[in-house]
Length: 285
Image (cartoon, rainbow, N blue to C red; front, side):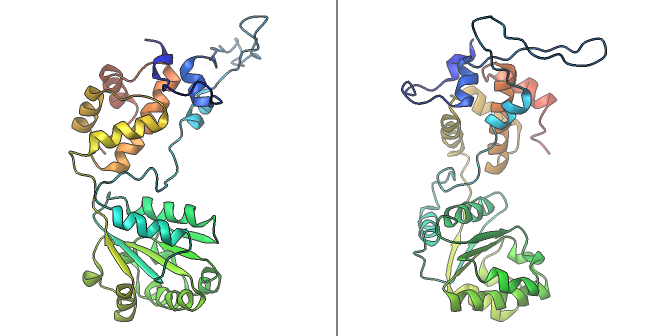
């Protein structure tokens, strides 16, 4: 099967992206073998009347790189209210200083924090802090000037970080900013200092629920369509049966599988997936 079969229908008049060009075969790869001294000679056009574009494996990797987290590629059927609140918050329409997301690992909390920061960047300064325990008191002056500060893992914050976050919350409230935090536990179960826990409880609190197993096949199909190819049902079934089932891992797997398909110019089939899983990507880790 030719790689062109993976190209989505309806892109006829649009400017063709690099990824689509690779899939269609309009951008060709050439194999360049090293000489006896191990050096690679300069590439030559495969035909005199056609200036062939050489696409290296690194470029293929870049073309099919994982999409940055956004609200549009957050796949969920049960978090519509939280998603709407975060869209409003990122657009500067939030009324509450604090917004808290909580839920099990792999539910998508970090995805939503990073998506909110990316969206808020269009309206003002925003920053994502990967771990609450890394926040230090001397950073409050700089952080309070942001329109949105998103802090992951607030349930891991130590005593000093909790004091800093309490000060930061008050500073953001005075300046009209917002503090968006994520936790594995609901606010009532957080073992934080009481004044910080109370302030977090003043704002909006949402439980982020992961996709059900029933919803994951449709989510994977949508992700594949967004990347410009179709994922067959038997491939989805095999992927869900033989690897990690949380959506962050599945999204990572889909992006890596897409890169492998582009690099090898082979369609994604169960046979190719089996070989790839065994050799290149440990989904069972």
